[in-house]
Length: 371
Image (cartoon, rainbow, N blue to C red; front, top):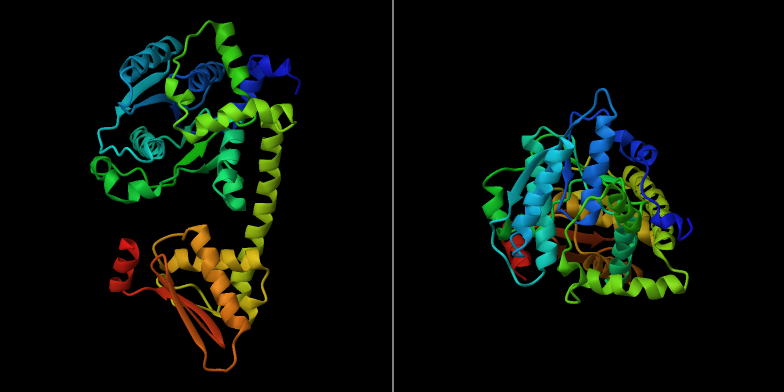
């Protein structure tokens, strides 16, 4: 797409194609903050829905984090626009504990929690966000800087389960958990129809329709990683690494990711000694596990730990465990050797015959969580 095309407004025909997969939903929650991307989402979704004889009920939901003095006024502005467009609107607020560290990550997790709760109340099938091509490019760059594996570099999917981050599994989520649980019932989906659309095109769409939008200065705050990465984008684009190239990289990584995950599934069937019990032990032939390609073996080990322990372990810790198992297996000198390690609430034991993974005893799990 040329630079001129990147400034073209989104047409009604494009919007029909983007929102088409949602036509058979019962109800859809639109996440609308009032910024340009989500305001365009509200406008385009409303226009798409009006063109249908029958379709989903739309509910625009604004999450007021209370982090800026302008946020309440911006929520009211979204409501006025939603009323004009004939879309129901609701504002939900974050009244929980705030921490100075990882504020943006926490706010993101709380936002998904509150959106999920609103979707459950509205009996919605999915939540639609306005993540753009630019957001996708920034996400993959941020994950590169953090040393993410292939799964992380796959960035955002067009459709994915509603995420629940680790912050909300801990104490910071108690105040909002007490008023509703969005993860009970059928799984909620998160839909991102604009991942192939640039922010410039959404702004052009609003300008043509003469619809105002809010400007969040925190998007330019250099304290936040996304703002710093955003500032790098023009320089990278001059070297040929623009948002579309990065998005193409994401699509190729996602293809490779799907292939690896399929292979891991085959390995699970081939190596398992039977159905996986909830808390283990899960056992494999040590020799056959050692013969797997490293990435497949690493993911298989991660799956077993997630199954019997306290969730998926950090990639770096999983890699360290896998390397320890490999070194021990390579140096085995007798049939009686035995290596035992704990990770993420699971105990991993390697012997000459078996690799087994089982749930750690309660005392060990408490010690692991506090370390």
